[in-house]
Length: 95
Image 1 (cartoon, rainbow, N blue to C red):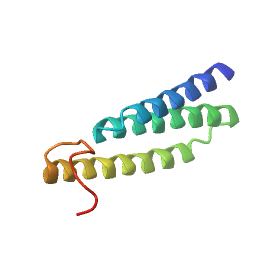
Image 2 (image 1 turned 180 degrees about the horizontal axis):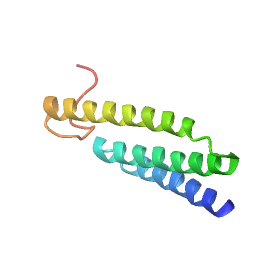
Image 3 (image 1 turned 90 degrees about the horizontal axis):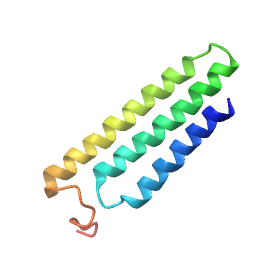
Image 4 (image 1 turned 120 degrees about the vertical axis):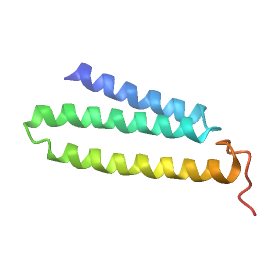
């Protein structure tokens, strides 16, 4: 159990590191956030498998993570349609 949790937390911290390093592109930020959600789901699934066969909460977590991913992709599409790219420096928040 300890090795699986180590893998999950390692995935989580790698996702946060990529999120902090690739902050110029919205698509790379969204991908790293989805990787963080996937690592949290992995740790949750391992934890629930050791408690018993109650995987209902993991399905609710997957539903919310899919909704979060769709919302991020819709923001990405609207940003690309209005500004032409996904750079954060290409648009100003003061207009």
